[in-house]
Image 1 (cartoon, rainbow, N blue to C red):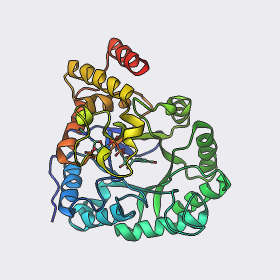
Image 2 (tube, helix red, strand yellow):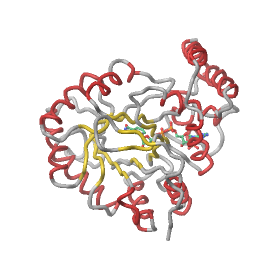
Image 3 (cartoon, helix red, strand yellow):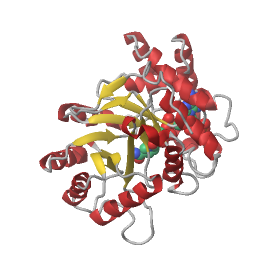
Image 4 (cartoon, rainbow, N blue to C red):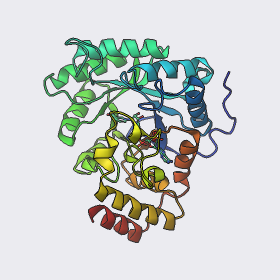
Length: 330
Ligand code: NDP
């Protein structure tokens, strides 16, 4: 049975999520990849337990997480809870989502009330939980009225199955409408979860400003561009890495020749700051005052520990930021 480290709150930093009562660790852990069937349960639990021992209280899931079997991440997280992590339920902040294709037929995808209600019930069963801390709509649905989707989120809160609600992958305009409806429903939006890293900056086109103005927290996913913004691919594609796996989107998206030139130049800047590239990439996302937390993935304890050390040096000089901009634009 896992027993948490007594000093688990000694070094992690926490930040308030928008205008809410919730504090989130600056670094949160997601279970999209690395928590499916490719690794033993013991290895997965070792990473989850180490994360909590370092003060990472927030774990992010979704109905479809777990490779190659969707849903397996929630099942494995449920095992970790039963193997001791669950003793600390009141110290944990657990999220799940629905919005992508999950079961066959017309009711297992997008944003209907029918889908969201049923999906959360099945997520709770897989994890063995009575409630999650936050339930997200995973992506906007162009066909379903926003009032229906947001109404389902609000009712889920009223049923006690989620304490808060959030949205993910909504562009600024869509997010603004969703935030307004949730506020009218008296279940304010706690968090928005956009993809944001040095290579993907659409969140800067109005979304971050909107979240700040509306008092909604922001938790950025894939801050390391799925591992591209680390030392992982500086000498090719290592066996077992995410890019080496079938169906991976990293190669085409982030490991093109022009991006690799940038990654090497960024690695040099990180070295001058006395940081690994991974730590600098995380600090760069956290430099924005609107960002509550970065949502990382980790396939080992060593990666997790490297990433948490990002908090030792979050400050950038004006010259360093300009140099990074120059490399990214180059
Ligand atoms: P990251 O950008 O943090 O990429 C994680 C990967 O980077 C790891 O699996 C590992 O790759 C590599 N890595 C991490 N740390 C290091 C390090 N220090 N040195 C070298 N390599 C490192 O995030 P993800 O893309 O995994 O996304 C994180 C979370 O965000 C997900 O688990 C999920 O919770 C959430 N998410 C949400 C989405 C949404 O639509 N809302 C979509 C995608 C993610 P390797 O496995 O090769 O070792």
